[in-house]
Structure formats: structure tokens, C-alpha cells
Image 1 (tube, rainbow, N blue to C red):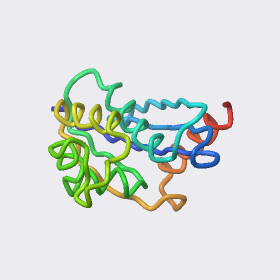
Image 2: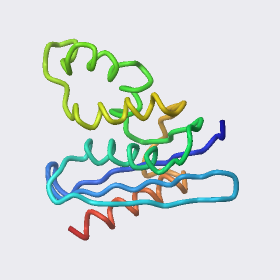
Image 3: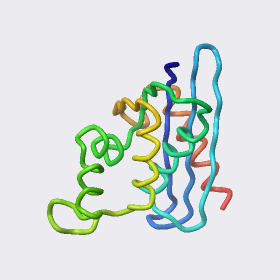
Length: 144
């Protein structure tokens, strides 16, 4: 399998409010930028959407090194929280409903197609790709 890097970020003006997402796929010397927006959403929905859209852009199963500044996304994948929420019918361990089950369901499907390896990175720091994803997401959100 090919190994690709996927950098993602989401942004929201107000939470909820107009939001945007951005992602960058990298394979060797090739890069592809994607972004989009929703008129009324949350930051976490945009973080999830960025990952989903990046994975959906892949044309074959890949080892995907996922880089995100969202602890919500990375912890839920890395620590198995999302899988457990799904097994319990989208209920968290504290018996509260898990948020965004529609997006988590799609993301888990894509994780079944690709070997996704999540990595948390500090946001708004010195990672040029995370900063570019943030700029894409903010620009998309501003277009709403």
C-alpha cells in the first residue's frame, strides 16, 4: 500500500456558526489541497469533515498518516472511543449520547478501507501544513 500524509483542520466562526474545513494530501512530491464550508455547523463537525473529505479523495486503499490538531478526532480514533461509541449505539461511557454519529460512522467506514494512523500536532504552531489547513478552513468559513 502507498503511504500518504493527510493534514486536516476545521474552523468555525461562533460555535455553532459558519464553518470551514481544509486538508492537504501529500504523496511523495505531490500535494493536493481541498476545502469546503457549511453555513451552520460546529468546530468539531468541521474537524471531522476535513478528515473524511481527505480520506474520500484517495483513489485506492492507503496507509494514511493523519495529522490533526483536534484532540477530539485524534483521541477518539487512537484510544478507540469512536469504535466503542458505535458498539454502544452511539452512547458514550457516561451514558450521554455521542455527538456527530453521522460523521463518526462515515469516518470509521473509511478507517476500514485505509490504514489510518492518527497523530496529534499542536495547532497554530510551526507546522506549515497544519497552518495551511487552518488558512484553508478559515477562508472557506469566511465565504459563508
